Figure 1 (cartoon, rainbow, N blue to C red):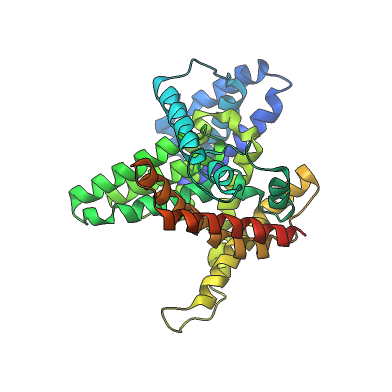
Figure 2 (figure 1 turned 60 degrees about the horizontal axis):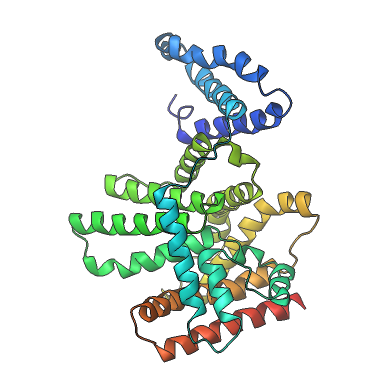
Length: 357
């Protein structure tokens, strides 16, 4: 009973229903809801009887499957007016782009690269640079995703550590981190993968404050359920599909691969860190590779080398750039940090250019 009612099972059934509904509704958008409405209403009218029945769990799963079908088939695309928060976030994004473009970077690639990493605007990048990212299998670095949100989350988590570990400090830190993540989501246009990452942070921080265990599979499935309930049509988005497949690989396969490394050794073990990074890259590619092949007919042959070399540089670049931009915005031009940011930008592009060639 408990197993069948777990959030993982309910989320999977609901997602399956949304996927089938999205496919069927393109041919019969008006007939399907009329057929499914009585089926979905059964658990509501017959709830007590179903709970007493031994067939309760299967019926509950069937109810979520049909509910997903109904929600997907009857969803109407909503395009309302821009809200005040969305307008404010867009204005903040424009100011951030202007601030970055006005910074005294020596390398021509630095400003457009930082703009792409922090706002998602890749229009300033040169054609050769974009091609180097694509050919080396590093397109996911330019496309805003959970990678960028995860790095920013770590930055704000570390920056708020001085607040302490008291109950009030934990609530304050959670508020700052969730607010920053939500604002970044709005600033970058709230793409499906960014929304997924924001939901991960929101659910994770909520579990921490509530004293609940953050089981990765449940966080993944709950985020999936919430996102599809709010916007069922997003299931057609390739970015949404790749984002959740990548996270499914990390949640399901990465722990298995990570355990292959022998136990023991010193606390500082760089070889283990390299293996962990490789395991993450392999887990993501094994889950996203088939879909990428179906959609594009290609597979990034050098993905492992690219991730091992590029991800640490991207992480360091975002750390340094966030601090540099913040200090520059406050009126202080940190020359050393600007030089380091320039160097990291050049290093990243050089690595990807070499790999792509």
